[in-house]
Amino acid sequence: MKSLKKIFLNGIVDENPIFRLMLGLCPTLAVTTAAINGVGMGLAATFVLVGSNLVVSLLKKLIPEKIRIPAFIVIIATFVTVVQLVMEATLPSLFNALGIFIPLIVVNCIILSRAEIFASKNTPLAAVIDGLGMGLGFTLAITLLAAFRELLGNGTLFGLTVMGSTYEPALIFIMAPGGFILLGFILAFLNAMRKEGA
Amino acid sequence: MTGFTKIVLIVISAALVNNYVLSRYLGICPFLGVSKKVETAVGMSAAVTFVMVMASVITFLVQDLILQPTWLAKLGVENIPDLRFLQTIAFILVIASLVQFVEMMIQKTNPSLYSALGVYLPLITTNCAVLGVAVINIREGYNLVETVANSFGAAIGFGLAIILFAGIRERLEYSDIPKPFIGFPIALIAAGLMSVAFLGFNGLIG
Image (cartoon, rainbow over all chains, first blue to last red; front, side, top):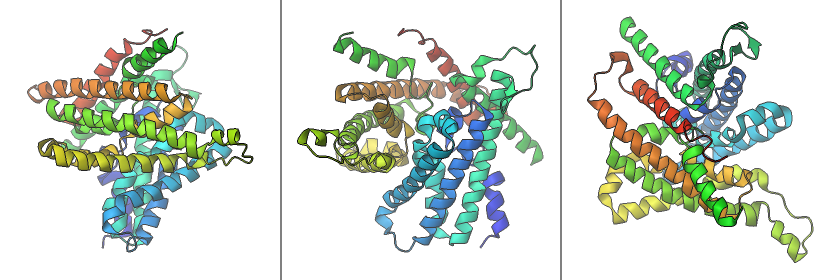
């Protein structure tokens, strides 16, 4: 069995869900108009990921092979409902900013794929660590993209003005096309870095 | 505004102005995953259209009859149960079983299409556009006819985007692209440019 540290780092670097596996792109592009939304979305998904990985791993012997996917989805949906209710009660402004993408965490492919690939085959402890690593990898990537978009499209970072008053915000970056284009450039940059490093 | 005009406006708005893929960012996974060939893109969008419209109708009924049963008031029932917190779970179960049904149907009637769509068919379950449309229908407070119109428009928009995009990607295969951009990066940038084009529909409906 791989060491826990390796499992943890796997999600952040080697198999970063967004930059390497290209999973969970809808929320990645949709909520990243401001850095704070990226952090909120990332942490919400991390919570669901850790919770569902733990439960799936605990129940792996009880869930029949044939209906495992619906079973996983119900487990994930339960955790999403928890996040939804807690966030609505405690952080209403973030809840409104993320809007429809909170219930849509259910269909975030990262979570289902970790349940299927990892949690259903490993011990509960390893599954939790994997969930944490993947979740933080997702959070880092989504926050990075959101920070770039907020900086270029609004001239601010986490709501603070950074670029100075002479900066003319390039609105396109917080509109729909900017998300696609910026993510494309970030991926190309990472590809180029990797080729040189290898 | 007459009822019919409103329906037409909902369809156009869902398909073009607020295109679910290119301006609301729903359903990006199949959009990038199944768009390498025009043929599979057509099959995928047909499957999505069917699932999306069916799922919207069924989730609408589930919401109206079970989760938020205001009709009980007419029967004189007091203490109407409010089960809206179960929305996410109920909707995803409806969609998952519907997808299973469509999968079995395509497998029986059209094996070649089935093998072409491969792993992406079960993935319609996790196509956020399907659940997204269902949730948006409820949030917008659409009635049954408007629900059908909105989900049909969304499906048309999804199909339009994915088929056009597949056409672009077939061309990209033969283009000379800088090495780091090959694959997903150039596809994302192409999608971004398409999204710019769709911005042009803004203001089509005042």
